[in-house]
Image 1 (cartoon, rainbow, N blue to C red):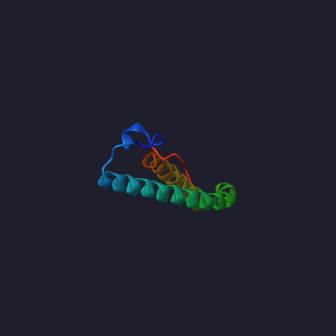
Image 2: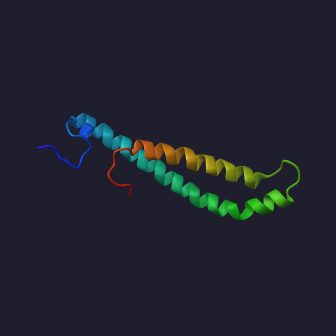
Image 3: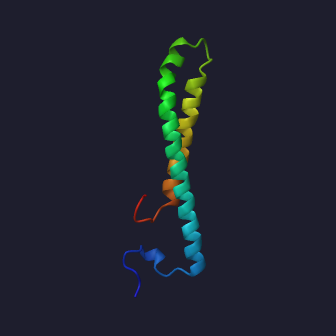
Length: 92
């Protein structure tokens, strides 16, 4: 009998397909961990962004640029991680 907790499309997979599915979900979990680490970095950068935007002359705002890059990495890796983990009954 098939495991009723699994989505219908995953109930009759071959061992090779299960292994590929596990690798995809592991990569998604890795992306989510990296996005979380960058969220911590972005939180720390946020401490300097206001001062950088206030006191740095012209277009020289390195902390703001680093913060924007960190936010972009968080969004890209977070979305990619969630998409790759699709079908997982839990996000741990």
